[in-house]
Image (spheres, protein in one colour):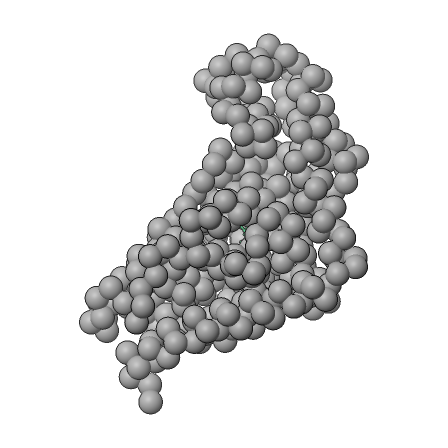
Length: 336
Ligand code: AQP
């Protein structure tokens, strides 16, 4: 089988509240890889249902993630955008890989522990097996590179272990490549605006904890104004951000949006109060995000047909890659 050299696969869950962390940690990096890689970007709806989703909202959120990909600048003619449930190879390969992965490996996954919380017995089996489905997503395309935020690093390591074990168990050295994580840019872990020690997240109950890709200029400015900080002015050096989680988060966001380093941001704002820095950050965030959010809004309100066409066309092209890989896996495993 042809072995891809530069094939990127990544995904975002359609669980609503798409936020600045998803954009800076993932989607924006997806855009940059288009020049050098063959890219496959998925809306991972099978992953979304590991936690209960309202069916109508799931459909709308699926279109919204696709709209975000397109509005951010992913070209659906040159690269593939599709939703996971349309390509059956993901679920099929996930089952086979469930039989390769070990329970001990999954027991170490910190995201499951965080998401299941104290009531682990009540979490879905799907939430527990989530990282194996993610391994299947990547390996179904024999992808070589996976751009993700920092929080997904452990899952990527598991995907590498699953690939290696499959190759060993069935004596097919090199069949699955070892996918490389691409954790890029200065905002690999954007933190909550309400608590700088917690990741910005779709599921945080407070809407003030995140800037979403639905927020208008006023909402962005309000959320930044209310963001948790401390009474001191900004430090002159990056070292001075130590122990100041809220301040550090806002400086990282400014750096990521402006393309400056944190040190450069502090050269400009060191010694200034948040009363000066926050409005500057809000202005920058609105300038960078509003072209994307307004195009997403336009597509969602008046061009859903286009989004659906992109997803259907992407699924056909994804199937053309994953189908033969899956067929070969079936032969390797011994299914007749
Ligand atoms: N706060 C973040 N900073 C940087 N990157 C982030 N990502 C998520 N949160 C941050 C990256 O976004 C991509 C898609 O994430 P996902 O849809 O799989 O959701 P998630 O990682 O479970 O995190 P969310 O979006 O905050 O959802 P919940 O609330 O359910 O945990 C991934 O590449 C991820 O690294």
